[in-house]
Length: 502
Ligand SMILES: [Zn+2]
View 1: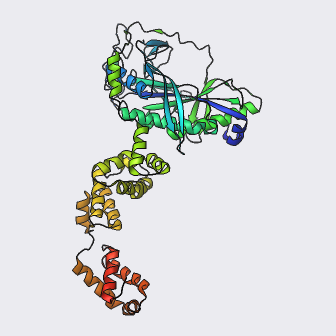
View 2: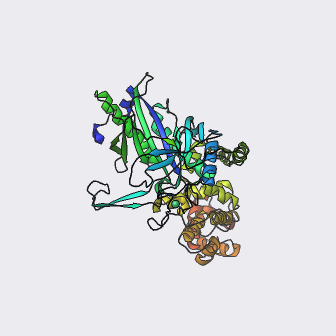
């Protein structure tokens, strides 16, 4: 189906009610793999980080990574889940070349965390509660690279390369209950949920959750049912969507595609689908029917996980302030609107602003520089704010120089420009570029005298009461001082010297 075959989004929602399920995989940032001591560092030579256990060689035995379990419990607690008193790993049996053991060690009917929720805030400030079914521990697979074909897919490839460095890296899979009642906002809810979950994971310090690096990926399950009915329709599973924007687009596309199929009398096939970044479409993957049987059975080589209650409570007590709570607190402290806070969040500026305030800047100044000049520069260069070559401490120093009157806004912008260009810290840039405001009254007075002498006609007008004409003289002085004077003070001096009341 091409994009033009879709039913319009509005028409789709006029007839159908979307039900979503979101499955998010998070790669934990542990130093070693989930069941062996192999390193997890990115960028190592292919198969350099493998051992008999993660290669599934005969006689090798797995051992559970304690930090992996601790991270799973932290995530479960932060998602308001119950933590199992006793649970086991299970083998999920299937063949795939990038899975050397021929089974994935996962959890089946005994997840470590279950029955929770996550409140997510939509753009307009409304809070939507997403119910969490479970969060369970498992391991990642290796990576196949298909060589020789035009598309990078296996079709048309001459051979495939396998790298097992990723095989056995701990994953937490977080599964929502069916998300109902979001209506036309379903795609927005999906995006907001993944965004909130990502913030949460980062705040917990269990993963960097960088979607572009595949450290966090989302499967978007979607079905439609006619408005006013209860029974779920057949769902599609769009796999491995790896950006917030794509999650929203995938949900939106699937709503329009399902509606097109259903309204023309067709049936939805239960299948996995691939998302395409270029045009936001999805295409069919493999057919999935309910008879799919992974022959799950409890992993005989691993002891059950039975986290002591005292340990769970210790972890609960040590949870950091959760992102939504923190955001609301900061919003109040800074006195900004929900909309402004959303912009700050979207710009990825919250932590930068907090760090700038911690370095001594006022909150208004910190927000002004990060959301103004620096956001503009980041946008121009097509990079994240955090990637700019300036630190919060340097921004705080610029703000301090403005506060003490050494810099005006224009000079501050030039100082920032210098820091970004690698000319050194703010004081060095001010020194090298000679950016200090001319506050020497003598020098300023001389510049004013010069301007009056050079513009006798204008000076006469001002003396005659046309105070508005002073602007032209201020301009002349600012030009003479290369913008490095305080314009308000210059105006005062001009009027003083001409004997006129401001
Ligand atoms: Zn290993």
